[in-house]
Image (cartoon, rainbow, N blue to C red; front, side, top):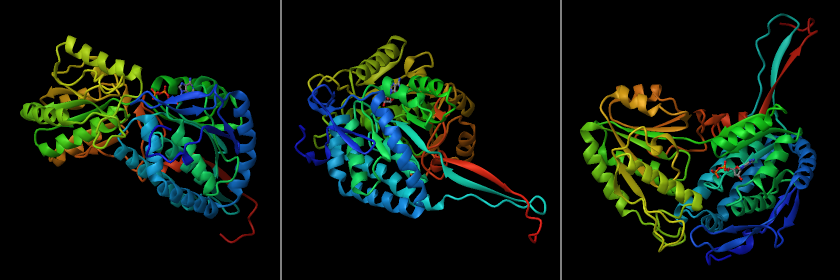
Length: 490
Ligand code: ADP
């Protein structure tokens, strides 16, 4: 491990296969620090055989886990939550080393990730079916909520902790077993979380962390009839492929896919709050989040003032290795991400946008650093409007009327997050209702919370994670009709 702040105890170069830790050999997958390019360590390159082994152990372990009752499951999750918080700094250092985000953001992600474990430890005890109103004498109808069984989770690199806990915690709380395939760029945070779960008393075999080639492991997971559900967070392209792969086995799916988030800034807004909110919605994790502002619509009356203030804030952002104190924007995850950012900036400029600041490589810092950019005069023909940039580029568009803003904001096949800045209640309510997105932030750029349902509409996905809804996705409703009760009083 290259980072001096990391205690190597939690950095384990091994995968967890049905309760058995399998160490990586020299032929394992190398994981690199995106800021420095230095290798952090290796994880095993597993395949179909290990997936089968994990499924066999998970199938056994799941039955026992479900039978133990909600109170026991809640207690184990609470112990896991405590372990994660107790190792917050070590986990944050691992996360920054493999993902690149500034250490303070990484620590914030550990807290945020832990909050899902806590929330679902609490929700575990609130799962219940219902007794329905009797339809006729002699019959009773009821519903039971039961865990769906063995489930698979495939997670992305941008939130190596929170995307894992957001799936694992409700799955385990409901009584499911989980096979997790973390992103190959960021497996060490997931492995450390599994190690802490083991220490917290999670039964052996219930959780596997399977590292290796995504296509092969994804193929084995979707082909296995024992796996009844898949929860995936990542690109729409891969989500759509997994949807197709899951069709023959009629698996239940949760998909959290790409977004193309609009920010609508009305001229009656609190300008300072709108600038701050936009900064948060745009530049968190270097713009590498699926709820990042991708198109910023600003009403004509305040367009110039907003652009000038935002430009000043963007110019002041400190780019650097996430492990360095004060860094606000870390590296892009890889060269493909760097190329996409530069291509989007070039495309916009070639079609008439003005580059107010940034948008160039900062090679003196490392290969993956790009200076945060602001583009004004953006139009719907540009790639920055149509595609998710997933990088630190803020594209500004001018609008005049409410209807124009809503029409432009909804002009995308995606529908994950959206943001509105205004002090006019009628505008806020109108926008809230008209935006075709799963989430709307009003006068704030930070909307995610364990207590709230996170998810999208249209091509942004299926299902909700977090909130009361998040555990429902891991439960089946069984209906029971009890007949032959004529002797019973009504
Ligand atoms: P991103 O653009 O965020 O890297 P991806 O959709 O490529 O998004 O990756 C998200 C997750 O899906 C990662 O864990 C990745 O390894 C995995 N993945 C990528 N391709 C496949 C595939 N064909 N089958 C299963 N999982 C995949």
